[in-house]
Amino acid sequence: VSEKGDEILSYVLEGLSDDDLSVHCGLFLRECVKSSPIHNHILTAGPYLEQLFTHYVFNARFDSCSDVLQVLCDLLRRN
Image (cartoon, rainbow, N blue to C red):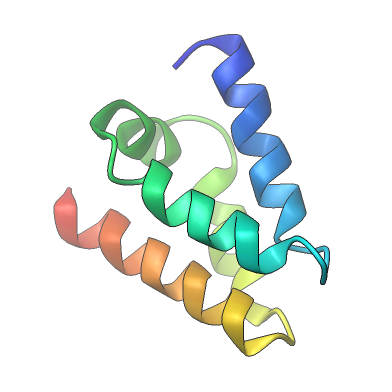
């Protein structure tokens, strides 16, 4: 994943904290995880996996929380 791709992934994760963007970012993240390079990048590089487990999974919005849990499930099941 390029530096620009890493930056975009960071923006998507930050969008999960925004009530207006969280549903869209959650769906986008779920689709991104289907790509093998992004999948491996989230698992091996950067703080992404830790952020998903410690911060975003506890979002007060059910839609956002369920998207993050689905992403985590997909990440762990496919690897």
